[in-house]
Length: 562
Image (cartoon, rainbow, N blue to C red; front, side, top):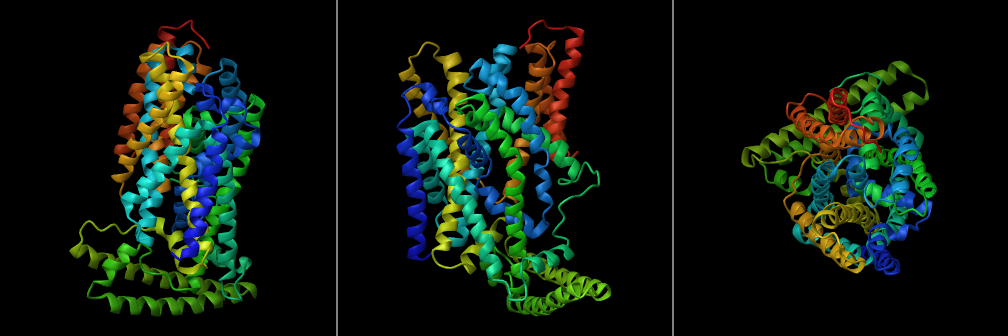
């Protein structure tokens, strides 16, 4: 990177972090101050903090690459979100505020018993710690590959920075930092879209770009076909996505802690509801950026591998020059036909449009064959070679084609997105460990000052553990899918426990506890045998818990209700 990019990047990140620490120090030295920002944040803080928690660097690195390779259909993943936000606002939030809980899992002991509370807390802590490690590793892996940064030091720097301001300022520092982080991130994505369009050929604008993308099958927003093995269609999005989002926002402490910091139940409801209706347009914009990157590379030759490590290995192969020459020839032929396609569409020449569309698809097939040939060559000498480079598409475009200064700003945007979701994760891991385990079972009569200091030490401990996880993270395909798959292993079971608490008053702690254990084992087994697409695991886990506990309650009803 240019020195200007370094100045812009470090200045942007440093300024936001220092502001967050400054605001965080204004919190009271109490457990409520450290974990819930004294419950005084307005609705717009709740909104931006909730959005920043969900939108990690994985979202802004992986989602454009996902659109580049797979089109817009990933947006269906979020279709169940608005419905989930409405139900949360009606059911979950009033109960949490009425009981004045610090964590979602406190409610479960009041409704059931301590072992159900501790089980659900552990079901949260395990995947949250693992996914936070992936969140740390995601930008580090990609930045180290494209910019030559040391992977371990990049991981350590990011984790240390976030752990420090979480320890110093607690929840208030997280919230104020996230508010600015989210503003920078949204501005950065909009700027990236404008700059991509600006670099397209003169005759290709937004309208023409969408026409080409549509003919190439990239504007595949809605898939009405019901298929339980299809990851992204309207049914998996509305049903499976609804269960995942309801569990994530209603029972995952990384989100619950964000809106419990609101100054009132009304502020929390307003922030959540607006998040439900703004998240889909935001995700649409991020995917659309990926579509514009795809169009850009229809007129500017794309590398065979976006991952520079893969490109380096490829350059060492005997057939490198021959295959690259063929790849260039195919690109030039396809580029001319793309321009002809736009003209044919504008002149309403349906026959020529169809012919060009078929021809372009054939040429794209030849490009894929050449890439497959390159992969085969590399694997002869490097059997462990990972050919997937979806996560590198967007950042490679940024570093190769955007001007000095803008590169530093957009890399700062990516790191800030990572830091925002990491901060919420550390906060949630700390609050759950402190309130549901340490304060409840290990040291029940400590002072506020004692718990305040121990919370800081717990934050440090989780920061170190998540950094260790990050150091062992490897290229696992589309990282945004990895995180959601990991969550789908557990979120359905956790949601089932909470829905039993709210809607099955005859269930007891014993019944729900054993139902959750059996359901979790069955969910993991269903994933292992690839029974269904991962979004449906959320539905499966939830329904299994409710079914098992419901049947048990009919045999032996409980009189304890919320």
